[in-house]
Length: 228
Image (tube, rainbow, N blue to C red; front, side):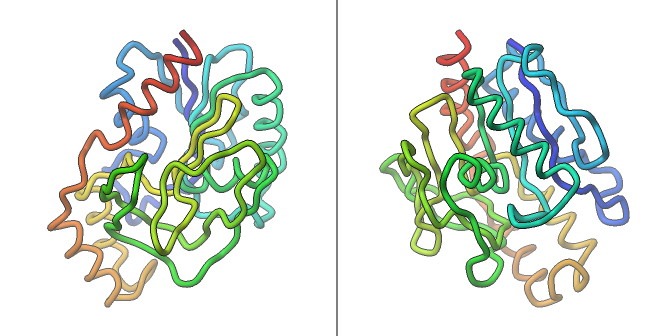
């Protein structure tokens, strides 16, 4: 089984030196369940070509510092890639921005909603309450045709989607670990987020009990079901 991870988020060495890149963090997270998969990370924002659809069995889309409304060079190619993946029935799993761009491409809508949400938040996930790490301001505001909501929160009604073709996505970041977030926020205090918000997020991370394998089982089962 070959899975390509599309890293769509800029890496800031001044704040993240010594830390893994986002795509590698995702690969480490999903390897907890999908240990038979060969995972390859494509740093799309660094100029890497998109993976060949025929060379991989499935794809994971990361979060991003961009929104679906931005005009990054890779945005239009990404939209075409998603449509081609759907046409060839290749399984897709999206996280945060990945969740938003999939919804936008497949007939829904994503846009900015209120203030940025960063830290630990509660969600109803597949009928049960859980907590997850989040960092986003955009949300899916219109559910695409043929998709069903599998996760939600008061502030984020469409926090997870399952499609009627091989596609699955979540707004939260199951791959983030508390120390990863706290290190970045601490180093960038007052620059990426305000000092007050930065301090609050670091405090939340110190008390976080979010499971390290959050949503791993569901994504593992998703890929194994659709890839075999």
